[in-house]
Image (cartoon, rainbow, N blue to C red; front, side, top):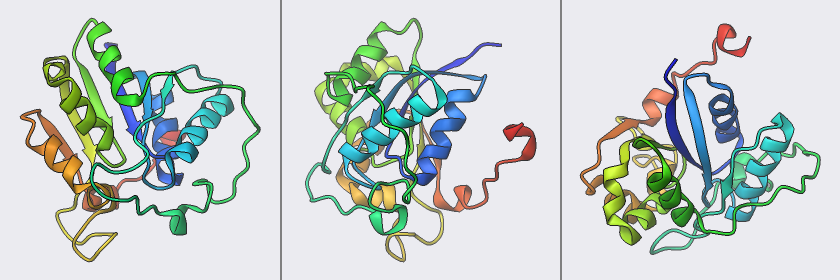
Length: 203
C-alpha cells in the first residue's frame, strides 16, 4: 500500500484528539508532522494535549508548536465546549516529550522541502499556521499536494449562525489560504456532522 504523506495541523480539543488518533493509526497515512495551533484552547494546551496523546499511544511523530493568536485579532477559544484543558477534564499521565524548537510554520516548511514527494496538509483547526507558512515561504506551494481542510459550512455555522469555528476564529488566515491557488478539499461542518466512526474502523 502506498501511504499518503501528511502534515496534520490541529488544535486538540476533544474532536481533534479523535482525529489525531485516527491519523496515527490509519495505514493509508504517513503522518510526518503534527503542528499545533491556538483554537479550541490556547496553543500551550493544544501542544500539551498533542504530546500527551503521543505518549498515551506510544507514537513518536514530531510536534511543532504553532501560532498562539490569529493573524489580526485576539483569540476567542472554545474552552466552554472542550473544558479548560481542552480534554474536558480527562487527565493524562505527564510526559517528558517536548515540541520541536522551531515554530510550526518553519517545521512545516522543513518537512515539505525534505520530503521525497509533495505532502498533503490536513488542517482541522484555524488556518493561522498555514497562512504564516505561505507568507514566509510562498515557494513551498510547489511542495504541497493539496490542502484537506475541516472548515466552513454549506449550511449553518456553529460559532455564529452563519460561521463555522475554524474559519471564524481567523478569517484573515482563511482568506490567505483560499487565495493561494492551492488545491483545497473542504470538509465543512455539514459533512463532519454526518461523519461516524464505524465499528470496523475501531476494531
